[in-house]
Length: 477
Image (cartoon, rainbow, N blue to C red; front, side, top):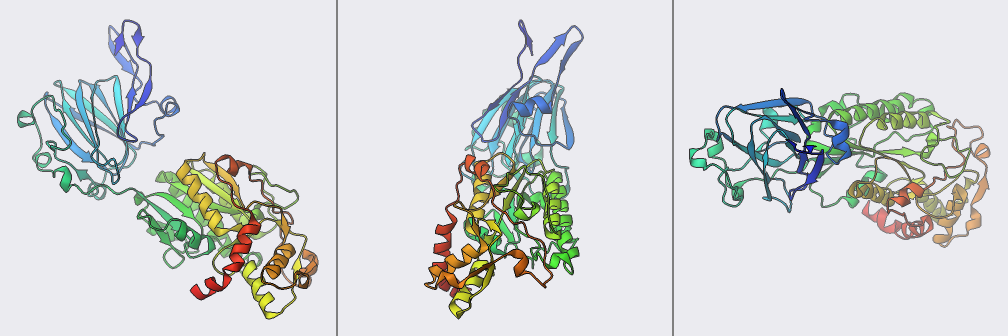
C-alpha cells in the first residue's frame, strides 16, 4: 500500500515455480480510500508478465475470515489479486514434469497479485472478513473445461502448506475436503504441438526430429486435408500450444491452370483460417514459405524484401505469409529447393544417371538446396530457443548453384560423368510447354537465422550424404 515515501513501484518477480510470477502493484491512497491499476497490459508485459489475453473476469467474495478454497489446477492461465481484505495464497505445481509438486506461498492484499500459469494448483485462505478475491482468465469457463481440472487435497502432507488458520475449523467445501493426495494426482499434461502436412518431405523430417516427444501429434492429408474448407473446424484447438504448418500446395505449374483453386485454398484461405485460430487460441504458429514470393531479380533475398511473386503459386504463398504475420506468436520459415524423403529433383537426377540418360537441365536459376532435416532442425531450434518471433530465411550453407550444377554433382557422386548434363536456359527448357514463371535467383540471406545460434551445414556435404544413402532410402520406402 502507500508508505511514507509513496506507493511501491510496479515490479514483477519470479518464484520457485516456473512461470508463477508475483506482481507488486502501486496503490495510491488519500482520505477517500485508494486506487490501483490492477491489470495494466503495456507496463506489466514490459516487466516480464506474459501477454496472456484475458477474456473473463471473476470475483469470489468471502464473508468470513478463514474461508479456504482450492487446490485447483485449471487448463488456462490466470491473474489473481485482491480487491479488498487479505488472503494467504498457496500454489502447487501440478504440471507434468520435473517441478511437479513444487510449492510457493505468500500473502496478497490489494498491492500484490500473482500470475498463475496453466496447470499450477491455486488455493487461498482469507485472513479478514469481507475479502474480495478476483481473477482474470484467458479462456471462457465451460463444463468441458472443468473436466480437465486437476485437484490436490488442501491438507496434503507432501505440499506441507502452512495454513494460518487450522483447516479443521476453516470454511471449506465438501468437495475440497476430499480431493486426492499428491501421490494420487494425475499431472496435467502440457498442451500439444500439432504438425500438419506430416507425410510430405518436411513432415517426414519433423517426424524424425520430434520422435519420442509425447506432446507432439502428426496429421497428414488423410487426417487433416487443408483443401477441405471445413477441416480446421474439426480440431479442438484448446488442446494445443503450437501448430507447425508443413502442408502446402506445391504443384507450381498446375497452379497456373487446373490447380488454381486448390492452390488458393491450401496456401491462402486455409492458412488465413489457421492464423485466425492461432490468434483466438493464443497458439504459436510455424509456417513454411518459399523463395517463389520473390521475382528473383536480386541475390541474397533478405527477410523484409517486398513480395513480388511471378506466378499463382508464389501469389498464394505470399497471401499465406501476410496472414501468418498478423499472429502475435509466429515463425515464418522461408526456404528454397527442398530435398527430403519422397520425390524430388535429386532423386530424379540420380535415377536418370543410373539409367544412362543425359538430361538437359536449366542453368540460369540460381539458389541453394535446403535439406528437409535441416529445415526441421531450424524449426525445432527456433521453438526451443524461444527465438524472437518473425520471418527467417532457411537454406543450407555454401555457394549458390544452378540446377544444372546440382545435377552434375549428383552424376559425379554416383560415379557418372558430370558432362552428361547439358545446361539450358529456362526459356529453352520450357519452350513449347505450359509452365509457371520461376524466379531466376533464389539465394536467401541467412544472417538472421545464424544470429539465433543455428547455422545449417553446407549443401554439398548434405548432398553427398543424401546421394550415398539413396539405395537405403529406396529400400526403406
